Image 1 (tube, one colour):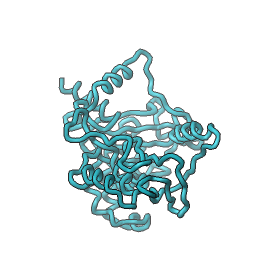
Image 2 (cartoon, rainbow, N blue to C red; image 1 turned 60 degrees about the vertical axis):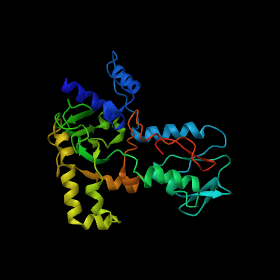
Image 3 (tube, helix red, strand yellow; image 1 turned 120 degrees about the horizontal axis):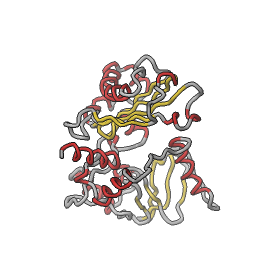
Image 4 (tube, rainbow, N blue to C red; image 1 turned 90 degrees about the horizontal axis):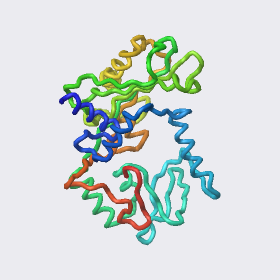
Length: 306
């Protein structure tokens, strides 16, 4: 059944950026079972994504002697005697490590933060990045909107997903769009009488078309570049179309706040190589394996997709 196969691909893709035939069977079994459990609902964190961040922070700071530094850009992993011993922040402040340094940046950034020559780490980087580029998931297009509440129908759900064309690949640019109106569930996320909308192309925006704009380094340069602004408008149109499926009054010119995120935004703001969503290593791959928790550099570890 073609539709059923595409639907399973959609579930897998929304979870971790790869179709069903490249996803672990255990993951697919869990997803399908959980989706169709009696009384199943989609949970939403009170306070939005900030609520998740705050909860994670509490999990650390509740322990004596543990704290978190916010808005602290790491510039370098410090290496002494072939061991990671700390980090240097962008303001030149040094934080020493008692046992080790754990990276949760993407794979390339994990390598690039080590600026001291280390043969083992450079050999691994050559394997994954230089000789044969490890496959990466695509990036995203985003719309962040603030709108008057009257523009969102009362019967519109708090979240909906649109597949523009079931005959196209699930990861075709702009084909799958997720729309979220979290203020329908948590009114504290928007001023009274307004809603916030976050809508995005689900990991289906390639980076290559955006390469020609990499030279635009400042907000002013990007704002004044007509070609860049037109391209952003063009690539975000499928997202506007998906929003209109349930909220047709929400359109360009009718919103109070409009912010468009692109793969360049992901690359710059999240420090992700080519704005990628993560490693696209398929289950059962004989060509690639996920990098291990331990790096070749002593005292330097990985978590997440690093």
